[in-house]
Length: 273
Image 1: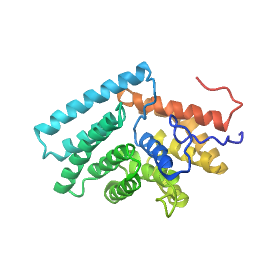
Image 2: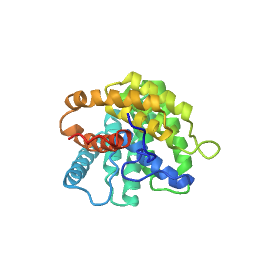
Image 3: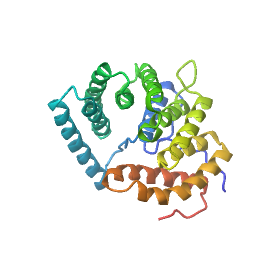
Image 4: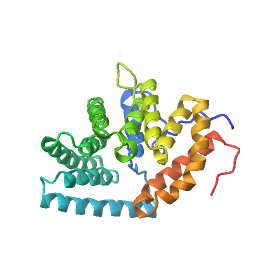
């Protein structure tokens, strides 16, 4: 296996993360949202991305309608928050992204007031906080701390939710955030959560892919080899398990990230179709 290049694959469309704390956080939140199912949009969307945007808007409108019909229904509340997170990903401006995500935050907090043990509400609270943090410079660090607390609450309630999404999210948060005293970054904690995410949901491509991206960044050759070989076997099976229109946006991102990883890990090999 070839040695890896130094380019960091963590943020596919936002470029390499730099070390200035606020700039680093911008890239961090892009990485985190990708790992949680977000699809961070770049300039000049393709036809397929435009289609995903339209579908996300329609799903948000329908979820909002159902939530408004019964605002005390906790399931409809967190499903609306999920739709807010996904629709906010496609926002054209920061003001729109923040406005959409704030609706999801309010829905989650209302649901948590009614039932503090509702893991999905804590989870989508964290993800919508991430969308708001993407629009900030001053205050982003505080929001990241709020996200961390919400994700730990999910672990205490249901660590398997969204294919171990809280573990996956925390792993990336700790991998990409600046370390103490600036923020919460920690390679050892990141490693613990990556291992747990893969243990709980080994067949979900996002778990192994995020771990592999971090390993490339850290030049952890043993992990690179193990997770790279695992992904080569997993991806063909996963295309059958995670199939259909629902998973099309995820595969658009996974395919792009997987292509970049292969280029870095085996630069002399021709890309697979």
